[in-house]
Image (cartoon, rainbow, N blue to C red; front, side, top):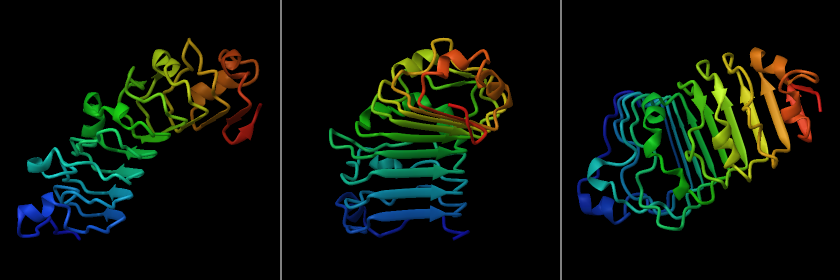
Length: 235
């Protein structure tokens, strides 16, 4: 819908009370380049939210509704190629967050505003995928919740280092996948969490060389049950 700019339902009261799409479980917005807000308001039954290629979207919720209660059943959120999206999750989460999977790809302003993410609210978050990270280090300390079990980071050409102190906090992490991060030089000096059982590295030439058996970073990963370098099992 190339010309669609905004949601319109006539009365604000309907939006506030969750009477628009009260049974909607899955919402996908794809290639709506002029849409400026992702959601019309409270969607009480929403379980899955996917937003792709919405280049002018600045907010997920209307600015007049920034205290909308989070959908109690939402467990999957994927946002890609929304370069000016400013806010991630502006809902009032309370203590009932069910979000388990979060995927963010090529969201420049969102990455720049990561200090506002407050992912600690997502007490059930297990999986996060980050694509197109534009800083030289990942992640910031305290950015990711300790509930995370899987991290996938890819296509981040500016990424040079992994923040060892931040990884030390991720005591539930079992699976780490790093793809196409051509500037990533090495693993953290502190090593990786002892909970890690699966490590996959591909398309990272500087890092791959150090992680081969006998390489400088090999002692940091030799305890991991499964290690793959460019899809080749080495441990």
